[in-house]
Length: 397
Figure (cartoon, helix red, strand yellow):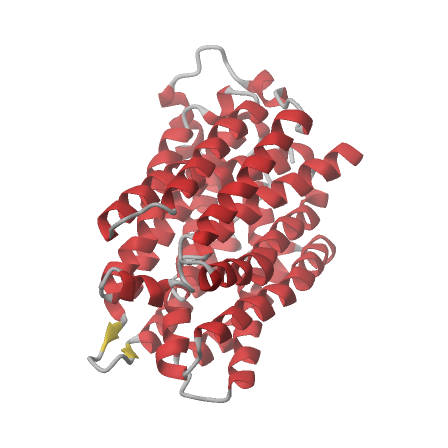
């Protein structure tokens, strides 16, 4: 039990660094647009390049992730992520930054799949909601602590400081993986010695439950992430926030969800994932509409709305994550999670590109079209409610 708690804590810390690395791009968006003299559309490609790299690696990962001890796979993937994040600090141009972010995404995109595989191997479905709540709390901590700290470092030193901070944490975490992370190879018992690539694909594509779970994963991410890339630029240019108030936005929202995510995880186990998901999804539409149509208003009112968005946006992801992990048995869990990660990264990529196409600068620094992004987010998310009803718990959970 003590070892399980340590593994969960270490996985949450890994998630923390991975999420800070991804999230720090958004609040620094206005800085990057000025630094590289790029448009909102070009910035959206800077964000989506990571997701594109993650998508490519996740597709490849489906063929090998279940063939190795979880510890060895985690060491390899997280080492690549740490090196890539370190190199981001030395990007001298927009083009070089694009390439480095793509390469970082190749490794970072696999982290989520491997983390979910380990959690699913350790925790039975009846306790998995609470475990997912802890992992989601890491997302919240990244917003509440990691992003504000990263913005502070960027303000005190320069834009590259957050990437040095994350890569420094990565070195410490890698040391802990080597020393204390247990070997995990029980899933190899289910693997055939000559398991072919065709059989890996067949295991997934012939199971309608897994296909529905994959589709739900990409719809969830697309519906949520389409809002994310332009929150900070919109708050600065349209609502009147300063860069310092953006830090408070992430701190307040992230801190609130540090507490709300574990609670929602426990409620998921108590009341059922599907019921709680439906309620949270419908309520979450309120802050989505308010954020994407927000006029210049007092900062404390805007912060109240953004904090509610953080709570409900992260909260509505917890129940379906538990459902998705339960849609597959241990035999090809890692491969499935890798494909799931690929689909979700594809969702992030598409969300960034779509939002970048809809949001435009009107010539005076004001962003237009963000309201359309909000409507589209709600439309996409309604599809997720329908898909979630089709999922079933697979044997072995």
